[in-house]
Each structure stands twice: as C-alpha cells, then as structure tokens.
Amino acid sequence: MSMRESGEMYLETILILSERSSAVRSIDVGEYMGYSKPSVSRAVGLLKREGMIDIDGRGYITLTPAGEEKARNIYERHTLLSRLLINLGVDEKTAIDDACRIEHYISETTFEAIKRHVREHSGDS
Image 1 (cartoon, rainbow, N blue to C red):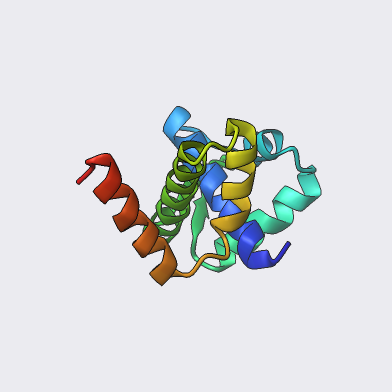
Image 2 (image 1 turned 90 degrees about the vertical axis):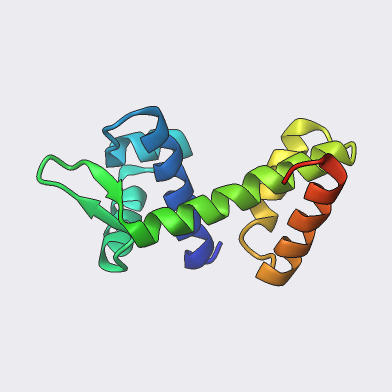
C-alpha cells in the first residue's frame, strides 16, 4: 500500500470518527482500523507534518481545512463507488472492499464521469 493510499485511509477514518465523537485520539484510529499503536503514531506524525491534522496538548486529533477537504473527497469516492457497485449487483461487503481499493487510484476525470452518470440515472442533483 502506498503512503498516499495509507494517508488517505487515515484521513477518512479521522473524518468518520470525528463525525461520531468530538474527541478523536490515536488509540481510536488504531482500534477502528485495526492497526498497531506504532503504525498509527508514525502515520499521525506524517499527517501532522503534511498539515493535514492538528493534535492538541491532550492528544486529540482534528483535521485541518486541507485535511478535511481531502478526507471528504475520499469519503465521497468511497460512498459513491460502493453504491454504484451495489447497484450493479455486487454484494455489499465486496462492493465496500472494492470501492476502498478503487477510491485511491481512480482519476478525477473518471470519478467525475461516474458521478455524473450516477446522478443522471438516479435522479440526484
């Protein structure tokens, strides 16, 4: 797994956890993702250096505006691709797993085309 993909997965997880609770810590991220404390610590340090997250004195993690934008983008890809695959007849677990892999590699051009297609065929605006 590339660091880009890994970083995106961490950002997406932090977004999901922050929508469930106002306090997100490294331990919460590790438990959600099933990763070890050292792995999470390394990733969190990289995301902080890249300006994607902030960590306060108590160890609580928040997304920066840039981190939140990236996390929301990847989460949108995940949810839309999952929904598309399910609508094509793929079972839910496989659709979610495949969408998680695809979301990190699909080009913006292709994703926008898929998004337009889904909206045109579902009545969403």
